[in-house]
Image (cartoon, rainbow, N blue to C red; front, side, top):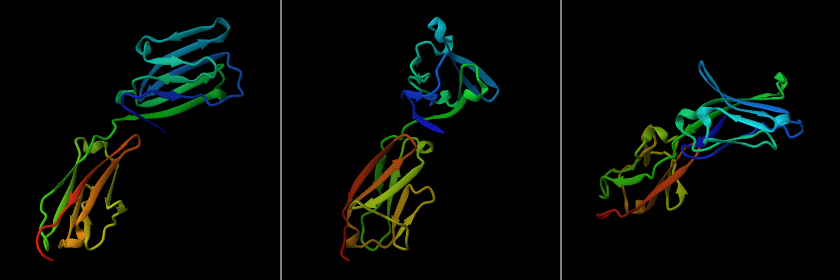
Length: 192
């Protein structure tokens, strides 16, 4: 499966450098929907780009690859390339276009010693986030009795905070096409 960020350009490649290309057909399939994108006839040096894709794709005659520009979520689906009308020269490429993650914000609810401190990694579009990683002073944090993570990993709770918990905390969020990070310098108030 191929992943692409919303708004990016994606190169869909036939991936057969040894084949002499005489005819190439690119199609899009999703569920019952199937539509032509490009037909290329080398003998006539003719490239036919179907209306829906006009201005959105570039076909490369040298290798049969197709560049999809300004990819959108509704471009997700299966792209089928057929070369020389040969059923043995058919390739299907599954494309998933997803939104990049947005810049997270890092918030805390308390800074008191001997109390639990909750750090929250706030994101604008939680559904776009696939992974969350927490660090303290650049070192990866793992769940234990002192550091407790929420199920979706977006909340870190420090149990019975002490002065040694002071430091720079960061949450790194990512998905298949992007990542971003927020950090917070935690200074714990009180004696302990």
